[in-house]
Length: 228
Image (cartoon, rainbow, N blue to C red; front, side, top):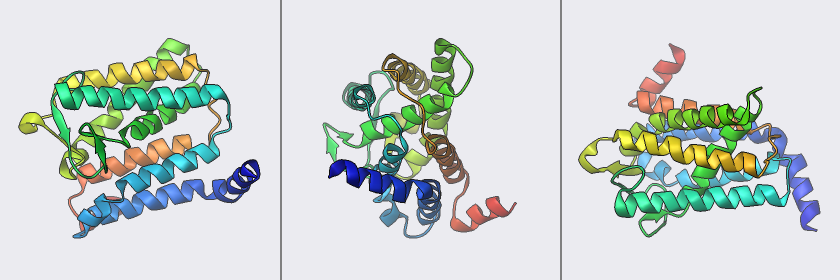
């Protein structure tokens, strides 16, 4: 019964995965740049959950190793955020706002899922390259830091999190590189299969999403950027 439901969902939904992801992020951009941004901020966890569901449907591997990878990254992601929020370790001193939803020990419960989405998509991207494992891990960690560089101004602006003193420390980016490299190592240790047609579009849609929100101040300026 469950297997049949899964197959039905996969056949029905996966062909529309990319348009759905693009549409969600475009609506998010317009909503967050509108006077109604406070309402759209509340949809951030929903966006992450739907994106994770679509990526899961598009993922070809149903092995135990993939499940172990997902649990490891989710747990490690939440763990490093706990150390950061409570003690200032790894990333520096910061605190979370209300945008990412319910918290446990000051850390949004969904943050582990966010780490998983970023690392999984980057793992799929780098696995498609003809490089040895170590260069793939290091390149992936760099791509994760690139993503965070775009996320930071948006996160501060829309109350994802805030930094002590209002300045993002260099420690944060170093921490992102180290943690991402560790997580990507697990991607290879567990031999996660990289067959996912949504992973690369999702990563680049995310880059576009945060780049626009970091650059535009209003809906009008967003359309100005697009038309220009």
